[in-house]
Image (cartoon, rainbow, N blue to C red; front, side, top):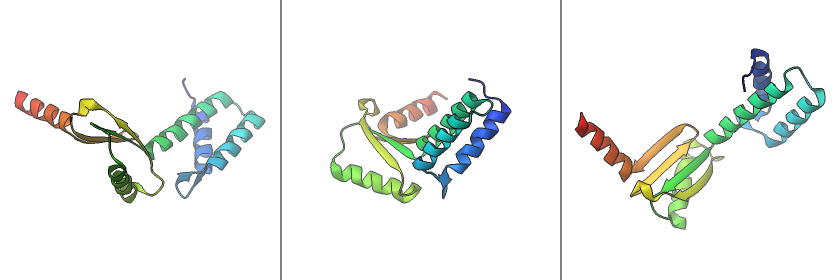
Length: 132
């Protein structure tokens, strides 16, 4: 959906209003959505679409998707969660999954950032370097 400049500005104002100390406040999000629906401003659909996009990107940037080549035990997941919280803050959400394609190691994705520590990625880099 194409979003006009006015709708983008309105969504940004809403997004800034629902943040507390740099983090999204869920109760403020609900209130903001209710206010938009009640007032029906011009470009309501576009504002809501852009606001949703901004909130989704913020949530994704605070969510770590951890893939491992094999299942991790409780101690390993606790250590990874602790390291992520130490580096990125205590409000990081984590999700763990198994991806056998990694061969060994882990891959962490937070928003558009990816941190690779797995054999498959290292082999791909080595193959690329040898090809040149």
